[in-house]
Amino acid sequence: MKMSNLTRDKKGSDRIVSVYWFAILFIVAAAIVYLVVSFYGKPYDVRGVEANVLTSRVADCFSKGGYLVESSLQFNSENFLEKCDLIFQTENDYDWNTLKQYYVEVSVTDFNSGGEIIPSIDVGNINLKDSCGKEGENLPVCVRRSFYSVDRENNQYKVNIIAVVRKTEKNV
Image 1 (cartoon, rainbow, N blue to C red):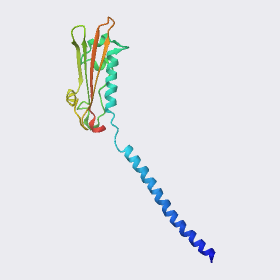
Image 2 (spheres, one colour):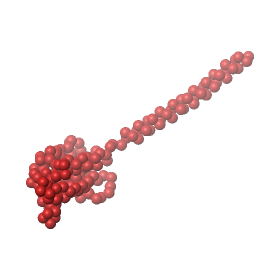
Image 3 (tube, helix red, strand yellow):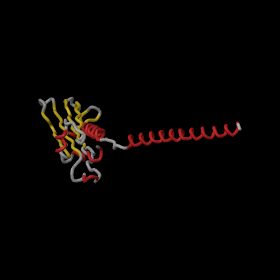
Image 4 (cartoon, rainbow, N blue to C red):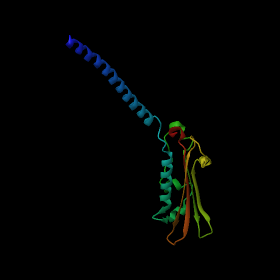
């Protein structure tokens, strides 16, 4: 009789342990699903990185090793993209080909001539510049960068760059 009672008690305790075991498994699985959904559920907003890379590429086009590239003073809005090896084409998602997604403005100030702006270049969708300085979730990302450079005759220049990336439908 003692044997049958022990056997019955052991089977009952196994049932209780298996219920807890499935409950723990369910909690762990739910936690994993929650973490995966929260991590991958939102798109990555890379517009800030893209705008910083764009300003760096423009800065490299105007200055090499701290010296101003002499040919950059002859850049204009028509030849700027070609001379700096930039492409503003985007994928055709959300009808982006009709509305340009990038804007770049570059101005070079010559300190020797009393602050005269030599070339002023603007390429892309100029309407994007209006969003610079504004706060909001669905606004384009604007990056401003300035640096100083000298030419081979030690003339001093200040280069101001504004780069704006829109792509709000995909990244926000």
